[in-house]
Every structure is written in structure tokens, then in C-alpha cells.
Amino acid sequence: MAKSKVLLVEDTESLARLYMAYLVPLGLEITWVATGTDAISKLENEIYEIVLLDIMLPDISGIKILEHINQETIQAQVIVLTAHGTKDMVMTAMRLGAADFLEKPVDAERVRVTVNNALKVKTLTKEVDSYKQKYEKNQFCNLIGSSTAMQSVYQIIRNVSPSTATVFITGESGTGKELTAQAVHECSGRKGEFVALNCAAIPKDLIESEIFGHVKGAFTGATSNRNGAAGQAKNGTLFLDEICEMDLNLQSKLLRFIQTGTFQRVGSDKLEKAEVRFVCATNRDPLLEVQAGRFREDLYYRLHVIPIQLPPLRMRDKDVIEIADYLFSKFAQQENKAYKKIEASCQNFMQTYPWPGNIRELENTVRSILVMHHSDVITTQMLPIHIQQNNTNPAVPVLHSEVEVPQSQVVNSLANQVNSPHSNHNTEVELSQAGMNLNAAENYIPRSSPATLSNASIDVEINYSESSLKIQPLWLNEKIYIEAVIEACGGNIPKASKLLEVSPSTIYRKIKGWEEMA
Ligand SMILES: Nc1ncnc2c1ncn2[C@@H]1O[C@H](COP(=O)(O)OP(=O)(O)OP(=O)(O)O)[C@@H](O)[C@H]1O
Image (cartoon, rainbow, N blue to C red; front, side, top):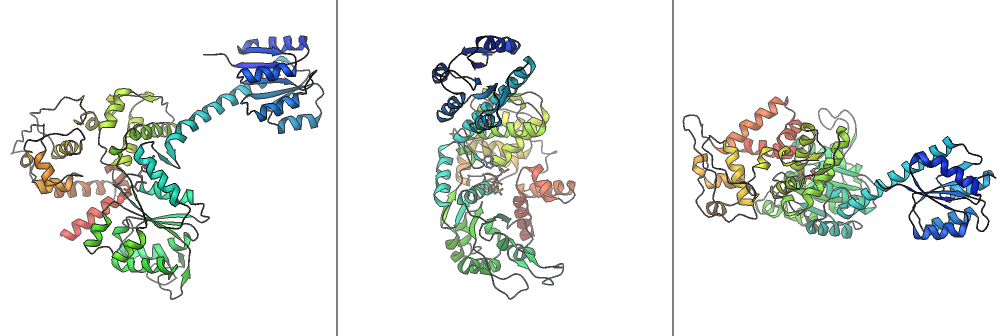
């Protein structure tokens, strides 16, 4: 490792030699100069971690040298040496950015401790700077990712934040819609709070009171007056997630609030006023919801002023590695573990896997790798098996299996092929072996249609032993499995959703769908 460089500025030669002798055990590279002019010339041509600076010099005062260091933004830690240590002199030096001071005569131990401390600060500052440099390039507020797709999202956020125009964010589950909404608020400079409300996660009969608040006695359980999200977000931002899940009656109340800036708490006839900036999100296609009569057209046009379409992770180039690197560092710190890097071949696998659960899935994967392994270098073998076996990765041989394969694996494998940018398959898909028809598979696999499926091929040969495989509709299998997980979590849906690597709203939506089918 290179030695740390120290510039010693001291006009008395005997003292300079003494200080250099004191510092020998620290293994530093020390340059000694006796005048202020020489000191400035050295500082202009060399980078030093530490400057040991005598204040009383024959030509220029040490204070002037400190001013020069400040003006030129030289990044050294300056320790001031003074024999005439008046309080004022020390105060001036500290104000000019000196890191510490030593009052002559000084003993060896004091010099070593002071220089060592300054070196530690210097190392930390360097680390922080490199961290900042690394992340400023690929980070916007809390959003990580330098892909072109995300750069244009950052640009829209920068442009729209200062206005009060409503922002409508769309994107698959786990793509960062809530983080994007937060970024819009952070960049807006609005004084009020950022208040987030998930319309799918709140029971229907409570949502109005969650948004607008209620007065005491408005309904059973309303034991006191309560401010809603609208009131809380006054002069701030109200983020309505999963807006398409809001029922039609409430949609008209929301429309009135947006148009007039006034609302009524549940159980009150008093109008209240709040200036609020609206940001909404959905992972559905809002226009399809309008066409299906589930979302008011007038509300849609009121809300859909600035659209932001978040790209799925599989379309974000190197973002997957940048986000994973950030998450490994973050979780390693939380778990008190060491983390250095992701091995190159492991990066390949991570980049070719399609991440259907987007960044939420990536987060869960990173956390489980950190919990399960104790190496500071992340290798391919640490990845979950479905990522290692992801056959969109050209490095992976095609799997021909004679063993019984679970139905979900067939669907995953098919999904990977259909969603793969490398996919050019054209033989018949043997879906019937997996107990599915093309329409059922279409519902399961994102970005697919019966047409694309029928043109895709599946390279996995499956031998199902009919006696052991109970074939039933895919949705029913999913329902039974999800219900079992919810039960195992004692009915706690957020906990179950974490284990299943989906958002709670996805589960609520599915439950709603099953209820409607019943
Ligand atoms: N660009 C990003 N960089 C780092 N972390 C991210 C990024 N985008 C999302 N995340 C993290 O991924 C997780 C999911 O993000 P978020 O909740 O914003 O997604 P979402 O699109 O709102 O999901 P859903 O539609 O399921 O509610 C969060 O923990 C978030 O912090």
C-alpha cells in the first residue's frame, strides 16, 4: 500500500528533524520545507494527506498558507503548530479549516496521536467521496440505476416536480412506483408531508375515512375525530397507490376534492380545505379500466396529466447490477456482514434473468443470499437455483429431464423463454402436459398472448406420471397455495406477501378475484 504523504512546514531545522523522528513509527512519506513560499509550491504540485504547518514562518504566515489551501480547495488535513499559541490565532486557524493544532513544545506521543487521527479522518473523507461519486452518477433521490430508460424518468421527475401537475405512474409491480412518487415530492420543495395510501390494501369500508378522515361517532369504532391522508398531505403530496382499485363512489368524491380543493370528513357536513399535490400509481392499464367501466373517465383525465411509465427491471441494462451492488452493501451493513463485489459470471446470470417481480424480487434475493452465505464475494452458486437454471442465459445448457417437474417450474421456464430477448423458438408448446391451455398460460405469464405462446417452444421434456400428478386449473393451485401461506402466517397478509415475494396488494387483488368468481 502506498505511504501517506505528509508535508512538514517548519523553519527551525532541529525541530523539523525532531518531528520527523517522532513520526518514523507511522511509516509516512514526509517532505520537509522551511518557508511558506516552498510550502505553497509543494502544495501546488503534489497531493498530501496531511500538512503539519508552523504558523510563524520567515516569509509568509501560516494563516496565509491556510487561506491559500482553502482558496485552491486543496483536500489535505492541516495540523497547525504554534509556539505562540494565542487563543485568537488558533481560532482563526480552525475557522480556516485546520483539522487540529499542536502547541509547542510537543512530545512524540501527542504528535503521533494527532497525525494518526487526521489520517483516519482523511481516509474516511476519501471513502465518502468515492461512495458519493459512485452513486451520484447512477442515483436520483433513492432511485438507483443509470440506464437510459431511468435517465429519462429522472428527467421527467426533475421537470415536473416544481409544478403542481398531477403525476400518474404506471409500471409492473415492484418497479419502484412508490420511490418515484417520493422522488417527485423530494424534488418539489413542497413544505408539507409526503403521505402514501395504498387503495388496494385498505378494506373498502375504511378507505373513505383513511383518505378524508372522520368525526367522532361517524361509524362504529370512530371513537374520536381523525385526520385523513388528505388533511395530513396539506401543502405536501398525496400518493394514491393502486388507484384503479378505488370504488366508483369514492372516485367521485376524490374527483370533487381534486377540482375544488375541498373535502368532507366521514360523518361531517363541514367542508375542509387542503392544497395537495396528487401522485397516483397503478400496475394495471388505466385506459382498459376506463373502457371496462371500472374507472371514471373524467377522473382519469384529471389525474393523467404527467404520465411516468416505469420500465421493468429486465429492460434496464446494467441497473440490475448497480441496484444489487447497492443492496448488497446496504444489507451487509444491516446484517453486520462483509461485502466486496459480485463475481463477473454471477453478474451475467443476474442480468439475463428476467426478474418478473422486478426490484422487490431482487431485494429478496439479495437479502437471502446475504443471510445464507458468509463470503464477501457473491458467486453464481449462491444464486437461487431458478436463476442459475434460467435458460435465457445462453451459457446454460438446455435442460432435458426425465423426472417429474412441478407445474410452476414449467410455467416459469416458459415465461423465461417467452420474455427472453434471445427467444426465437417456433415449435409447439406442450402445455397440455402441464395441465394448461394457452389461455390459462397467458394469464400467468406476463407479456404473453396465446399467439406468442403457440409460437414459442419449450425445451424442457417432461414426463408426468399421470398417477401421481393431480391436474387442476392453475388459478386453483395458486389459490390453494396462497391460502396455505396466509394461514401459516396466522392470517398476516403483509407477512405472507413478503414470503411470496409479491406486494400485499397483489394478494388482496387475487382474493378479490376469487371472491368474484365464487
Ligand atoms: N431504482 C431503485 N433503486 C433501489 N431500490 C429500489 C428501486 N426501485 C424500487 N426499489 C425498491 O424496491 C421495492 C419496491 O419498490 P416500490 O414499492 O416503490 O415498487 P412499486 O412499483 O410501488 O410496487 P407495487 O406496485 O407492488 O406496490 C422497495 O423496497 C424499493 O425501495
